[in-house]
Length: 524
Length: 91
Image: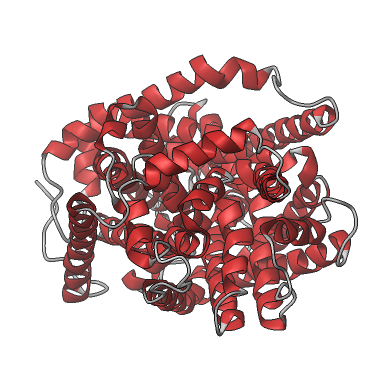
C-alpha cells in the first residue's frame, strides 16, 4: 500500500483521545441524557443504556477508529475513499458520501445553536436576564434573541453577531490543522470543560433545601426523582429504543467524524484502548456530570410537578429557560450562569470542529489542496448553508436538518459501515486490523457482536423507523401550510448538497485515474 | 453530541402553555386537560420522595463502573505512553 507522507498525524495519543472525546461530549450529554433518563424509568434507564453501550456504542466506536486508520494509510480521510479502500466496488464510494453529507448537514444548524450558548455566557455575566422572573418571560427572552417573534432585544442581529463569532472561532481552530489546531484546542478545552462541569455538579449537590417553605424540594428528593428506578419501564420497547438512541448519538459514531479523526493516526497506533478511553470520558460527562446538574437543580427550585413539565418541554427548555431561571435565584448566579453556558459552548465547539473535519479532509485528500485552502473553501460554502437555520428557525428548518443529518443519516451510515466492516471486509481481517498495535485485546465475544448483534440492532432501528415514521415523514405529514415551502426548499437544498458531493466524489476519482494513467505512461 | 433540536420550538410552546396554566389557575380558572394530565403524572412520579435503596444502588453501580472503566483506561494509556505497544497484533 502506498502511504502518503504528506498527511498530518496527531501529535500525541492523548491528543486524539481528547479530540474524539470532545467530538462526543456535546450539548446532548448535559441536556438530552438527563431528560431521557427522567422520562424513561429513572435509574432503570441505565440498564438498557449500558447494554446498548456494550452492544452498539463501543463496537461502533472500535469500527470507526479501525476503518479510519485503515483508510488513512491509503491517503483517505473520509468515507468515500475509506469505503473504497475496504471494498473495491465502484459504487461504494457513493455510499460514503453520507459520511460527508451527514456531518455537514448537522453543522448547518449546530454552529447556530452553539452560538446561543456563547451569547448566553455573555448575557449571564452582563446580567441581561437577571430581571426575568417567570419561565414565560425567559421563553420570551430567548425568542426575542433568536428573532422568532421578529422583535425584542435586538432581533436576529444579536443572534447573527454571536453566530459570526462562533463560526470564525470554529474555522479559526480548523485553519491551524490537526496538530496545531484541533489537538491543541482539545487539550485546552476538554480539561476546562470537565472542571466547569465538576464545579457546577458540586454546586448543585450542595444546594440542600434552598426554600425552607418547601422542605420537599431538596437535593435528595431531586436525586431520587432522577435515579429511583421504575423497573416496569423496562418492559416498554420505547425505553430500550430511547437508550439505544442515546448511546448511539452521544458517542458521535455512525456519522463519519471519528473515521476522519482516526485517519490521521499512524498505521500501527492503538485504536482499541484509545477508543474505549474516549467512550469512558464521554460517559463520565453524561452519566456523572450531566445527570448531576440540570434535573436535580430543576427539581430543587421548581418542585416535582414543574420538573416533569419542564422535562416534557425538551432538552432546550432545561438549558435555556430553566437553568437561567435558577441562576437568577442563587448567589453568584452570574458566575455560575457563565460557567454553565460556557461549558456548553466548549462542548459545542469541540463537536462542531469534528463535524467540519470530514468535508475539509475530503477537499484536502481527494483534490490535493492544502488544509488552509480546504478550510477556506468549506468555510465559505458552510456559511451560506448555515443562513437558512439562522433566518428560518421558526419555520422548522432546523428540525428538518436535524432529522436528516442528525438522525436518518447516522443510522444509515452506521449500518453501511458495520456491514462493510464485519461482512465484506470480513470479520477475521477486521479483527486483525483492529488489533494492529493494540494496547489491549478485545474479548473474543465481540467478534460475534460486531458481526451479528450490532448490524441487527441497526437494522432494527432503521426498519422500525421506516415502518412507523418513514412514509409520513417523506410525504411531509403534519407539516403546517405556513412551513411547507420552507421544508420543501430545505429538502431541495439537501438533495442539491448530496448530488453536489456525489459529483465531487466522481470528479476526484476521475482525476485520480487520469493521474495514474499519466504516471503509467511516463513510466513506459 | 446530538442536540434534541426537535424540541427547540416545541419547548417554547409548552412552557408558554404551562405559564398560562399557572396564571389561569391563580385566577381561579380550570387548568387545561393536558396540564392536569402532566400534574397527575408528576404526582405518580413524585410519590416515593427521597432516594430509595434501589435508587442509591443504581447511582452507586453506574458511577462506580464508569469511574473504574475510566481509571482502567487512563492507567493503561499513561502506562503505555504515546508510542508504546505492550502487545503484538494477533497472528
